[in-house]
View 1 (tube, helix red, strand yellow):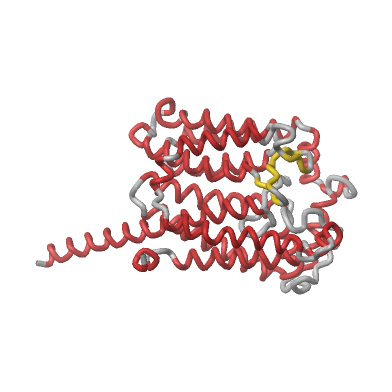
View 2: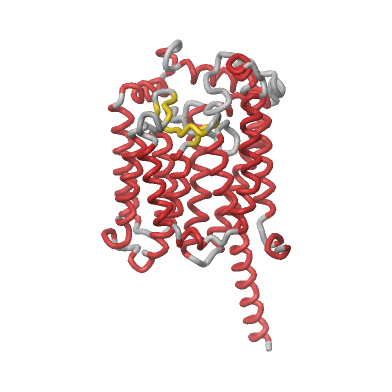
Length: 384
């Protein structure tokens, strides 16, 4: 067991722990006023996120210990459960509607979002299928297309909630696995064009999504309406400067910036900790990206390799989508900032996915050591 843990990527683990602690601190700061006004408790969101983080610790350790090939074996069952959950959440009385989206199951005083489970489940499914399709990966009909039907079904179910942001993130993560699987460039470009077209069509056909798109292009055209959130995000970022106002000293979270502790927590970080606080955060994300890619490159087993790439790039895609929305580079999609934003389901599933990535780091190190040993033995034979 000790040898097992010694071979893990401790640089990656350190970055993940720091991200979780960073998020917990900023949730306390960003959610103070809203918690006090709504629940008469300034620590309300902090305490709830802390519970999820406590639950996440044994989940993280379990994900590190469980052999990753177990997920391969149980993928069909997992996929069936995900589809069932996405169907059940749409039923009034079972699924809970929040802000016009029926995306949550109420469990006591907490809620569980099955779409978050679908994020990881689809990565495992795509990694499994494309690992088995390696002999046919250059053939579109036999190698590339089979899992796309399942992805289409998941996309349709998510749009019934509706949740275009999560659906887009899932497409991005699965697309990263497809790219890393060795599929032909023309197939990737064709599917990418179709995906962009479908997402663009859906974004412009629904009135509320179209308003989000137009407010992203020119938020000042409706400063008191659809552009209000983005404009206050701009103000928070601008007021932060290099060093920020100081932790818990932000102004925009005091009723000006909606969703300050969830989707727009990065704006609060910018205002309170300044550019250096944001840079430190993104250094941690960069470490996860670099170490994750390193793990994926090193692993020889196709399933492990694709799973490592999928988890790594999906986390990075979510960071990109959230940061892009907060600074006005991308439309607001409701995607949370991994490990940082308030949200129990999101945190727990992301921690579990990160645990799988850490587990895979052991196999990456073993592969590197085996390669180095082979090179050394060959070198000794040549010199002798």
